[in-house]
Length: 383
Image (cartoon, rainbow, N blue to C red; front, side, top):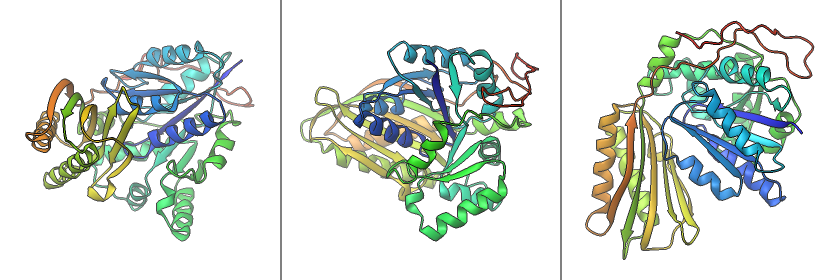
């Protein structure tokens, strides 16, 4: 039995994790397990903690992106395959990565053609970010980070305009037509990972189509590296304790406080994710921010007081040390005298230069394709 791999890319804040959760949850209601693979530059990932709540088999590849740690990806695939009859694996690459067709899709098709079916590469994008990119803007990002967003869209087999539930019917139709004109080689879907709008249409395509990675792009790795390096990356875990804290209020106040600080610093937010959980009671809440205060959302709820584990991930366009200091200061201020925090781990960084394990210069033949190159040109990454 072959395992189908669905790669879901897209820039930070596009809603990839929400979509994965929705799919896994819907399948779980049918008694079907799917495998999920998360990816990050450091351990302590909100996505992993959140997705484990679906009952799916979840594997995390941390320390580098899939493309720079191809063995980590394939080991994760092997682990999930070993857990029983799991026919579908959905993998979520790091949001600041591009060149996935050359560095992930082609190697998977080449090395694992007997055990894996690779679905078309789907790239999610937020409607507001898409509008800016289509208009020649940067969506508030550094120009090199915006370059990554454009390249993600250029290489997509399927462009998914996510959060379509926030658009009117006319707005959604217009945006879809603009995207189809700009990237005529890609299929464009409207979808909401939160509500499930358009989910069946997208799944009906990616679960049957074997044509993946139809284009290899020319990528300026100097610009790509700069686009990643301008982002400060913070993963932070701690334990919070209080006899009277309202954890829902704590989460809301912390996210709004951070939004105000980032706005004051004029620092573009890729995403901020906050996960609070009471491990012994199976209660949790997850908060998200993908821009200013108007982008803050929260799902789930926690009973008041007691002890909770807090995981916070921030991807913000600022120096990582400054980011860590700002976040620490705000957490301390919001905790005040009523909440005791025990810091477990904090890791801040700027991603290093991408150095993929493989980079193919030809599109490999898919199992049902009648054409496609079978020539591997560069197995040693890029310089």
